[in-house]
Amino acid sequence: MTASARILEEIHRARRPMRLVGASGQLGYGIPTPAFQAALARAPDMIGADMGSIDIGPTYLGKGEMATAPAATRRDLRKLLHGARGLDIPLVIGSAGSAGAAPHLDATLALVREIARADGLHFRLGVLRADMPRPMLHAALAEGRLRPFDGMPQLTGEEIDAAAHIVAQMGTGPFRRALEAGVDVLIAGRSCDTSIFAALPSLLGFPMGLTMHMAKIIECASLCCVPGGRDCILATLDDEGFELESMNPARRATPVSVAAHSLYEQSDPFGLTEPDGTLDLLAARYEARDDRRTRVTGAAWRPSTHPTLKLEGARKIGERAILLAGAADPRFIARHREILPAAAAVVRDLVCEDQPEDYTLTFRVYGIDGVRMAPPANEPLPGEVFVLGEVIAPTAERAAEVMRTTKQYLLHHGYPGRLSTAGNLAFPFTPPEISTGPAFRFNVYHLLHLADADAPFPLEIETL
Image (cartoon, rainbow, N blue to C red):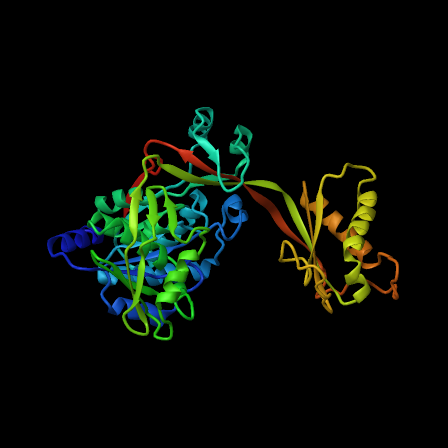
């Protein structure tokens, strides 16, 4: 009997609370061993881990590469595989390989197979793919079933074709299908983080509002605690609510810290929209069980009558080179808003003598306006600033040419009031200009309307 079948049968037969471990907020950055061992000692019914996010930007999705180091990712996977197989409980991982497209999922599966082979582990592996076929998207576009999301422009056929990879965030349905089919380990492509933890308890009939609320919190491990951290968290779910406890005794899940987590990645702290429906937190209540544990009740669930999937895609926009420099001359800092465009104009005249202006050159001045969109008016100037220059051009050679020229002419650019001709910039190391490789942008960030939100995600099963 597979691990998922065993847990489903056991809790169906003798109705009891369910214990779920949120092992990592993003697998591949390390799972503290003491907390993980403490979680295993509590005899959980499932281990889950989110592995991806769009927080890392579009480049990893576009390039098809993991954001995490292979050695660290292998170490985390090995720890979870041994922990789950040792207890014969399901291990569920979502958004495999950082971005959840085919290259990321396949790289994750390769590591899992390598670990199983090397360590003599045997299990039934379920795989859910999240890549969206281009013909299906073109058909949806023609039928008016694709709409912009979060300020994006209307999607076009050209953008669909230009995206290196396009994935959709799967909801709980595909996870439920895989767990019902009987698996020991389930690894999915791009996923809603809640799906990882909500699918199994929803199959067991636990209230969907409580299940989704719990899932939203524990997918970030102990981030909801004081102080927040990456240690494993244990959730104990029953028909009336759930209890949260960090497996690191130094972290406390308090009513305030847990409630505050409702703001995490959300503009509305009382509503969370998923492919399957909307989580309503207006009646949620948070009660301290002791100084380290909080019990949560009251969340409600409104099933969706018009399913949607959020699509994510990234297209290449060129090759990037950057310049890293600093400045401590108060005159340079005071006049940087005129100096930087003036130097850029000099560069343009030099590098575009025999070819068009085929690049974009931008600057950020950290200490003044590198982070904030609108610095306060009349704010005193800092004593020193960090200058980041960025160029995106059609080729790496062109980007390097523009940035190296920029470095030289910005270094010696003359401006009214300058006292020294020795240089306007200080460089932390040489070379200060660096080619960083392909640059991508999110060009698909849209909602797909469809009758069945589970249909696009095929299930594959193999035995290792």
